Structure formats: structure tokens, C-alpha cells
Length: 229
Image (cartoon, rainbow, N blue to C red):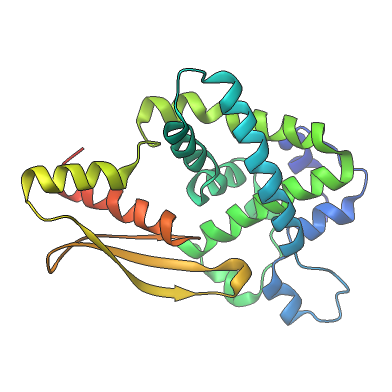
């Protein structure tokens, strides 16, 4: 597989191309191709997730000196969540290099977004191993951290749960409650679907890699559906 176009977009040339190939290799591909002698990307994803969070935390702390801890936490969540990471992965053309099972290849919806987000984290982990922290940091700053201005402008970082609760109590009365609708995936790669209710009425539903992310998306969707933004 020729990664030159991807490397050009990413702004980095790998010394060890096998690391980059591993970053694109999903567990489902290994399950269907047991003789491929490839490794899936989950360990790289684990490493890349930690590097991504550290770089973004450091970036926001140094640049947004007037923001408090809660605001910085919400901003960081907006920058490292599955929506942002999958968008960056798509922009880099990651879809063209994914090694997936035949079944996963057919799915282009929300499940593909999570695969792309996980792949981006694996790519960051691969960069860290191949060329060190500074190279990984430069990649993250260039492709992710610089989205901060757009996220601030769009208000996508605002704590949707707090805002929804405030609006619900002001306009309806009762405090919203959140219920897990569905939980799937292995321990290292959980996927949650959560619904938000006021009384017995469902106001919105959201998905995420954690219950907290899913609750935030459910609140955002509820705000949008009610026109409360």
C-alpha cells in the first residue's frame, strides 16, 4: 500500500511504514485475514489517545489564559471527541487506507465515524513511536488544535448538559434525567447510546465512546430539536 499521498496531506513521512499500516488496520480485518501477519491498531490507539489529550491540554492551558478549568475541560472535549477526530481523519483521506472486514467496509454511518476517530488516535500513536513527541505534537497542533478558533466561534464547546438543564428548568420545570439505551463493544472500545428525558418524555438521544460524551450529544440534540440554543 502506497501511503505517499496520505503522508503528504499529514505533513509527515514515516521511517517505518509498517507502523502506519498498523494504524489503519482494524481488528475486524485481522479476524477475516488471520494469515496476514498484521497487528490491529488498538494498542496504537491507546497510546495516541493519551498523547492527543496531553498536547491539547497543554495547548489550551498556554493560549487561553482567561478560561477557567471547566471551560478548558469542555473545549478539550470538543477538540478530542469522535466528531472532531473523524472529521480530521476524513480530511486527511484516511478512508482510502482503512483495512476493514467486508462487513465493516459496507457501513458508512456513525460506526464508520468511530472507526475513523480511533484510527486518527492510532496514527498519532504511530507518529509518537516513529518520530517522537515533538513530531506527534506538531501533527496535533496543525490538524486538530488549530480548530479551536472555529469551535469557539460555533459554540460547539459549551457544556450542553448544563445549558439544557438550565433551559428545561426555566421553560418546563423538572430537571432532565439521562438513561443508557444501549451499551456495546469490548471494554477497551465501548460505545454508548443515551437518551435524555424530562419526566416521561424523551427530548433527545446521543452516542459516544463514554456515557458522558453520549449525554452531551443527547443534550445538544435536545436543545436543537426544541430550538433552545
